[in-house]
Amino acid sequence: MALRAVCAAALRTGTGLGVNNARTIVTTVPLHKCIPPLGPMPNEEIDVQNLESLEKYRSYNRYFRQAEEARSKPAWWKTYRSYVEKADPEHGAERVDIGLPYSRPCRTKEVRERRQVMTDNKKNIFLERASRLRTFKISLDRVQETWEKTSGPFNIKRLADHYGVFRDLFPMAYFLPQVSLRIYYCQDNSVQVHYGNRLTPTEAATTPQINFEAEEGSLWTLLLTCPDEHLLDSEAEYIHWLVGNIPGGALQSGEELCHYLPPFPVRGTGFHRYVFVLFKQEGSINFQEDVRPSPCHSLVDRTFKTVDFYRKHQDSMTPAGLAFFQCQWDESVTSTFHNTLNIREPVFEFIRPPVYHPPQVKYPHRQPLRYLDRYRDGKEHTYGIY
Image (cartoon, rainbow, N blue to C red; front, side, top):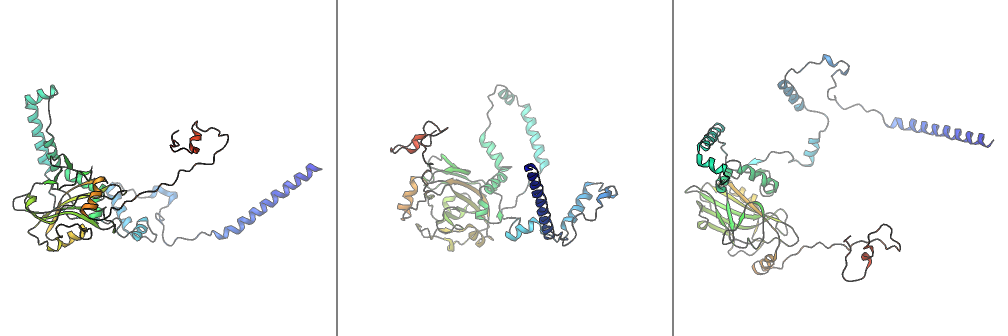
């Protein structure tokens, strides 16, 4: 009797459950009606049941041509590109090349010269003997010179893009650094600026020695700026050095518009980028509006924007050379703020929250042997070492 009652209750519950599910389905089906599309769907005209009747492309060029035509046709639906362009109108926009025109050497001539060099090397018995005895030495200066004339400018451009130099100094623009800059710090020229290497503010405290190849009678402008250093405006920069109307490669004979200021990356802000930009002038330029007072120890007077400076003189100068290094705080920055800039040094610190420890248990299970060190009241704590 009891078993019969249990079975009846189970059947009754199952029936009620099925009814409830049916009611749920009946009430929710009308809410999910199939809405027809607002226009024709892609490949709607293709008969899926009879794919053999489709016309074959027969060549890749024909397929590519039809694919381009299909892509250029306006569509009623929104694509990912339209959503992104609405949020960021400059997304996918092509950058403008503002540098000197690049003349690519003849590939046939390069191959012919390379083969001639290989033929001469094979006929050189002294070179063969040095290679066999493993005493052959390669001139690194010659390798550096060859790199600068072939793939060097393209590699420098990729490094500048990687470090965001063009993005912050020349928005939506770039240039190919075709003039190599050789920048040395310290009196013995032991510290050199490359393309993103790390220097200390102590090493870059004095004016560097800069050399570059220039034609006789040409004029140049050299700029040193930092896009990461401004204390009030994240879009502005601090100019560290500006020399204009440099005749040939004689930097000392140029017109110093703003004297050299050592790097001063603020403590707690990480690495800052310091960028040297070399401009080639079409002729002599009047820089009266860009001259800073000498000595210039005011950060307000040193506020600068490279893109505005270039737009002002873009008809008379073209960027041609680039080099940059990274710098982090050290003790010399404090002296620069106090003695040179005559202001208090800002310090950014991260206040770490106290280390969280769960409540201590009387009988810790599967805990390390130094479990009690977390809860000692002594001065020397050793928690965190397990």
